[in-house]
Structures are given as C-alpha cells and as structure tokens.
Amino acid sequence: MPLYGPRWPLKIGNHDTYELYEDIKSQVSFYLRNLILTSPGENISDPNYGVGLRRYLFEQNIASNRNAISSEISEKISTYLPFITLSEVQVNASSDDIDSNFLNIRIIYSIDQSGVNETFELSTNETNQIGFY
Image (cartoon, rainbow, N blue to C red; front, top):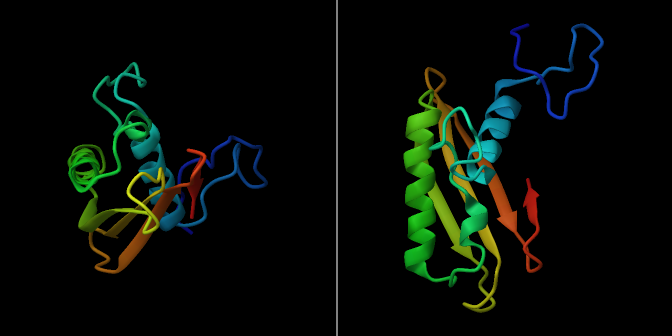
C-alpha cells in the first residue's frame, strides 16, 4: 500500500503516528481545496501561494470575474501542483440570478501517468459559506 500524507485535521492513527489519506484522489482533493482557499500572503513561507477565493466574495458575479477566478486557479495549479494535468476549470454561477453569491468550481484533472480523469468540486452557497464535495 503506498503511503500518502497526513489527513487534516491531524488525528492519531492506528498504524502510523497520524491518520493518512487512503488514496491519491483524497490527497489531491486536499491540495486543491487548500490552494483555492488560501489567500496570497497567508502562507508565510511562500507569499504567492494560494488563489484566495474569499477575495472575490463581494465582486459582481459576472462572466469576466468568473473567468479571472478560473485563470487564477489554472495558473496556481500549474505552479504549485505540477503533477496534475488540467483538462478543464469551470467556474459557474447560480442559474437563478446574476446577483447570486453562489459559485460552483469544478476542476477536471488527471494525475500524471494515470490518464484517468478525476473531478474536484467546490461550491459557495447563498450565505457565503464554502462547502466541499
């Protein structure tokens, strides 16, 4: 069984010092969520790390802003997660109305050498809380 990184939040594990992620998809999902939600400047060892999704919360929910988020995600993934091959980054708004605070982010990717596409989704709801799928 290959070893993966520690599961967050840290908990004592049965077979190792900490609980570990059980598969690569879970580990990559953690990396993607962390990259998207971390604001640039928040990581003191690398002030450029992170997309900073929260800084877009009060921007208009229009196509140009969604494209900016998508571009930022693509750029940061290629810089900080180079083992991921991106197929597509989709940032979609709620179909209800343009002033909605709802965004759905879908990242379709493969891990180098596997060739199998995986999907990561993250969405915000009307109360600006962030949920994960």
